[in-house]
Structures are given as structure tokens and as C-alpha cells.
Length: 402
Image (cartoon, rainbow, N blue to C red):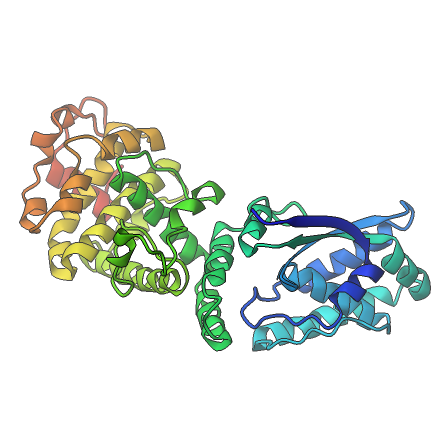
């Protein structure tokens, strides 16, 4: 670990420190909305009686701002609205950011029209403070990211991974980095989180380990190896070939792999809708148990899709669905612990999909034979009624289940 310096400075000292520093093109977008910007003004105003106020922290490495862009911009907007000198923010701003800057400035300007500007300015510059963190090694910055941001709001693990892998693109041109970030930011956050949740389960199960939901504690599974690593195993890696259950090469390979699987997942969702037209209408994904079984189904399906393609997947989907949702027929409440035990067992369908050399190995999988207790399960539709695979699952898929 390199040297890490931390010190608390006033806004006046911080503005001097920030002077003439450029913001790389590929850093995080300016995301604060007008409510967040006005909240900053209100917080400072309410702190006048308390004597001081801590705005948050800024992380730098090699003189470059690594974390704190939105707070820096908000400080600049406040100073501009107070008609005082403010930091120059030399950067390429996209259309959404420019519109956000315009709206936020107007809201801040109106909010400050009701206060004594000179009193506010004096307090803001000399009694408001930030924590300045300077890291010698860029990788040391991530120990701060993983603890969340400075207003107590947890950072998304996908944002941490984005910053981590951008650092491994240090030798690539700025426009390539900007292109990657623009494409990443265009993907809805919910799509990324959904993909990583399923992907993380596949990684864990493929190693025979219990899976968990994707979060801050999971990100190490997506920190791979450096492309120039000299070990023999690393030299065998084809950075143009992707696989869900193999290790990742840091940098652009990570991003292109993510983009690839976002698209594959969307294709998969279209195939599932084609085979099971009413499935998504009949599932209640707000129910934890149903969501777990659905994630298991998606993990199996994505793995099968990657391994054998669309036509074999379509034939296998009913088997994958039955294997995934039989847990709900066994018990209306399904835990992640139960799913893990089920998936990594010796007779699990997961291992079949993972290692199959021919899709017929999946088509011929016999749930009743492999899972000896399955014929004695009690269906949710009524106590003591044995499962009829065709009837009971068709009811689930067509919305006729009770």
C-alpha cells in the first residue's frame, strides 16, 4: 500500500488546492439533481448557529480528482451564485450534465436570494470543511470507495468496479476511456445490478461455493488479473473470448465482457418470453422466494445460452424452469441457504449444464430420478396433493395456479 495523507481543510483552502487541476474526461458523471444541490445550501445555512459544517471528502491520486466530482461542482455553483471566484472545471460535459448544471445553478441562486450573502460566503469559506485524502497509489483509493460516500449513502458496487477497471486502462487514450464510460452510463443501473446478481451466483456455484446476493462484499470476484501479467496461465487468456465462469482481465476486457452479457441477458429475456409468453406476468418478484427461484432459472438459462446457443436453450427451458421452481412446490418459503444446498449438490443440474458437451445431456435430465424426494413433494395448490409435472408447471406458466 502506498502513502495515504488525510487532512481537514476549509473550503477556502480547498479551492486553492483545486486550482488549475484538470478533471480527466472519463471520471464519473455529475449526477446531483436540483434537490441535492439545494439541500447542500440548506445544510450550510442551518449550520450557521453551530459554528462549523463538514461537507464531505475528496479523494485524489497523483494530483487528479478520483472521487468527489458532484460535490466539487456544487461548491463551484454555490460560489458562482454568490458572485465570487469559483474553481474552473475543465472537462467535456455531456448534454445531460449541462442541463443538470443549468437547473442546479438556478435552484442554488434562488435559494441564496433569501440569505445574507456576505455572511453565508464568510461562513462557507472559513467554517465549512472537507476531508482531503491524497493516495500515492490509485488502487488505495478503493478502500475509501467501498465504505460509501461522505453523506452516509452507500456507493453502488457497480460504480466501484467501473472506477477500479478504468484505472487499469491508464495506458489507453482518453477518448477510449470516455467511450467506455458513456456506454456504461447508458445502461440502466437496474440492468447492471440484475446482471451482476446472476453472474455472481454463477461464479460462486461454478467453484462449488455458496452464492450470495451481489454487493460491496462481492466485488473482489470481478477484480481480475492485469493483462501484462507474466505468469504462464495468464498468457493463455484470450481477451477476446468471454465466459461467465472464468476469471476477468482488468480494464477494457471487463467492460466489453459486461456489455456483451448485458446484451446476452436481454436476448435471453426475449427467448424466455417467446417460450413462456405469460411467465413474467404470473411471477411475483417482490416475493423473496419467487425472486430467488427466478434468479436460479436465469443463471441456468444464461449459462445454457452461452454454452449451446438459442435453439438448444429453447428446448431446455422447460427442464431448467422445473428444476429452478420445484423448490417453491416443496415449500412456499425458499431461502438462499436452501438454494445453495440444492444447486451445489452432487446430482445438481448446474453441474450438468456447466460441463455438458452436448445439449442432449440436459434434455435427458430426469428430475424425478435425480432428486429422490421429488415425487413426494407437496404442491402449494393443496396439502397432500402429489405433483404432476406437466399439469402443475403448466398452471404456473399460464397463470392458472392457485
